Length: 332
Image (cartoon, rainbow, N blue to C red; front, side):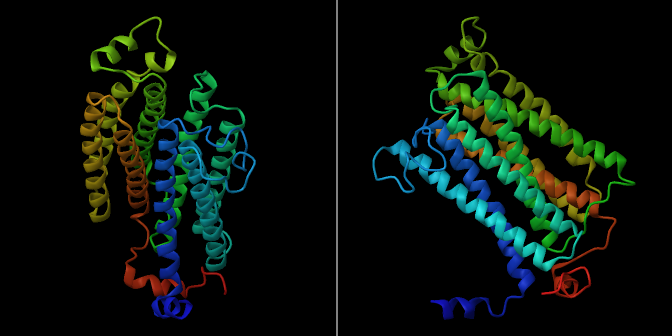
């Protein structure tokens, strides 16, 4: 088996293997995030009790309750994600010289995934899971969402720059930065309001669309239900901001492509958001909705990187091998 694997990778340059691994880490983390949403939606967050990092006091819990399986799988896949980021950092530091932008992005990726682990541990230890209805849980989930986006952003930039694309330049791009900042803030606001709305849907599922709307304006409703209307309103406003920003950043082939991707995802999200409300937020739709939210964030990061890096040296895949031999790379 080892010989077969070596035969498959023998002809692949080291920088290409690193590039594939980096994008694989991005994809794996997206899957971990989506599974984490399933943990919340299925109320399985207490599947391992209040133990962390052990599950019910054991490294590998015996087969039993479904909630235990769901939570344990989330911890296991999260652990793999952490190891993947650590490996990415080590590999990047070996390939690139001190001060290189790839090193910085990889370092931030490690910092954010460690914060993710800390937030996850606090959610479990403070029992802010399952049927917990506290304000603290909503706050932790909002912080969790923001940090998750920051993690995805750092990982995406790491993979993007490992692929040979130029670093960003803020000077001389003030107008572009303003457009991007507005788009990122809009996406974060939608994400946070979406996290609160999803928590409300989990804790207080509506039996009909009319009932759900009525509860949002009831003085007796829980705060997560009362705030649920903020998400669709924020989504409409944010969509307008992101669409305008993406349209104005179509200044070259690379930005035009990424702008088209952003616009396509915004359109899909808008439709799925309506369907999600109409179907009373079933779990499977929540997961698709979150997956596209992550995809939109990654697309915005790539659009920003293309827009702010387009004045630098143009790099194509054919030049990656040549770049690998330049002095900016660390000695093996």
